[in-house]
Length: 294
Image 1 (cartoon, rainbow, N blue to C red):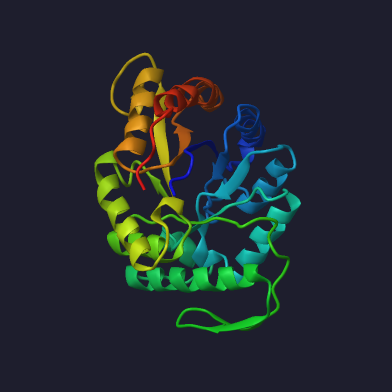
Image 2: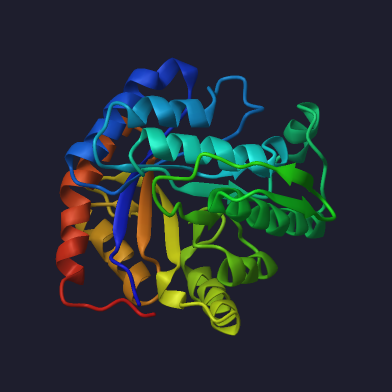
């Protein structure tokens, strides 16, 4: 079954911009948006820890859900990552989703002691991590022995407060199949996957879900959109409210996307408010009575 379209805002984890992060999270919460995403690049010296920021912001909000966009798997062992996510979910009253990535920026990862993996190895490790995380959230003792991860005697806990969505940040066709086969969602960014590529990758996700006996309509398909809301109509991600509403409506009706997180490229607080208070209502109005494709 298709799911309702969700909207959210990006919060940057810069240590010098935490007051802005708090205000942007409040804009999302007060405006009735569903999501706040926070990027996770632990090797960046200017960034605070993403999960700590999520816990901090969750304590200052009421309804909005948070997610790492996306968590760096090579620097976060999956059994511990599952515990960390479940703990924040409990503390927040069920408001944590888990974005998970195979790990970009190989030099930064290796520099912090993480493994350096090729593309195929990264996909294999990501697939194993999904199994370990799901086993941990089930709450029963288990053991796991894979090619990339060994967890022979896990006593997991706590159990999450709700069914945490496991959303993969991947961009290639083979990794897209993994989304359809095993994950709850897909988190992808416009600079890496422009609108023209969305239908192709979404078709792969849908086909893989059906082959696995899963409902393609239950998969979150989240698009991180970067740009500015401006009077000048330059392109799909730089223009007035009406242009933005058209861009996002088309992404739903023609490309099967069902969630959007706005990353303004400047004037972040004001731009976030414009998105929440003007663009989102315009898109919702456009979509009224239109059923997204499964």
